[in-house]
Length: 93
Image 1 (cartoon, rainbow, N blue to C red):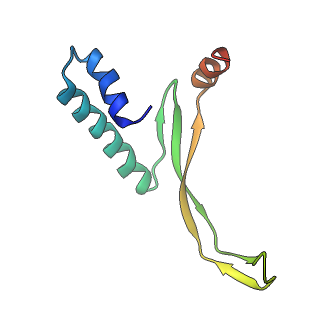
Image 2: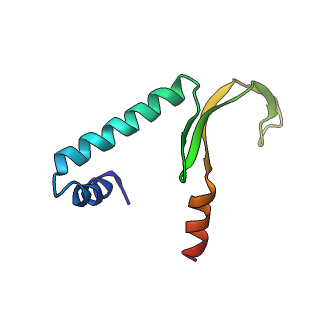
């Protein structure tokens, strides 16, 4: 499912109002993105939680040359599914 399909599915719950569904989805995604970028944890009960994960700088070996290379610190997003989501996925198998 992509964003357009998700908006269409939400529009059904908004009595066919696709504009309202798109605004609602954009507002939620924008809020979650801003909070994670600030380093806050975002948690939705029954679904899961997101948090910013920072990996420290480290030394690694280049696989072809074998030379030591320093990787800079990097940030990413870590998602952890909640128990209810895990249960729903398991039941779908």
